[in-house]
Amino acid sequence: MDWQAFEVSIKLALLTSLTLLPIGLGLAYLLANSKFFGSVLLEAVITLPLVLPPTVLGYFLLVGLDSTSFFGGLFFSLTGHTLAFSFTGLWFASIIYSLPFAVQPMLRAMETIAPEIREAAWCSGLSKWKTFFKIELPLALPGVLTAMVLSFSHTLGEFGVVLMIGGNIAGETRTLSIAIYDSVLAFESAQAQSMSLILLAIALASIMIVFTFNRSRSRVVRL
Image: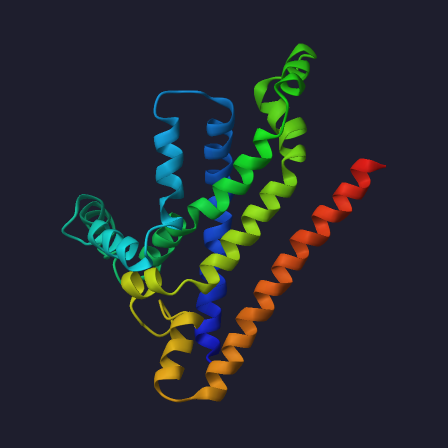
């Protein structure tokens, strides 16, 4: 068992899902409540990582994070470090490829909130911010929880983009999915099996948490 790769994977998945929480909420709220020119294009761009092959997405991210690009060069000039083949670059890439897993469940949940509920809250004297935190966010909580679990699980198991952006640097960018691949190539079946079972257990537990929460919440609502 490669515990170093396990630590990198958990750290990356936690940071990515926590970063995507405010980003996903903001984008979901914007798309659910604002009808503007380009909203369909914005949602399509957000959803693009779901249909793009990981190698294609990884290639474009690698080009965008390279020190010769504008963004990568700006980061290098400010910090003296490159984004490509670093944990920071891998974190940024994880935010991009897990973005639709955060936005879509939140967006679907917010779209189910009737406009009359918001209008009633505004008529009661609540500001838009208070309406969001006291009314809309609690109603959308199942979607938010689903988004966080999906973002965490997807980041934990991603392989193609991780390999393209992070490479295979032990203790920094080598995740469990990369370690499993290396173990298979080295015919270390027992190690590959143990790491695969850990990822399977985490994914199963995460999904069960979501189902349990949503079912218990549904029973409370019916009561």
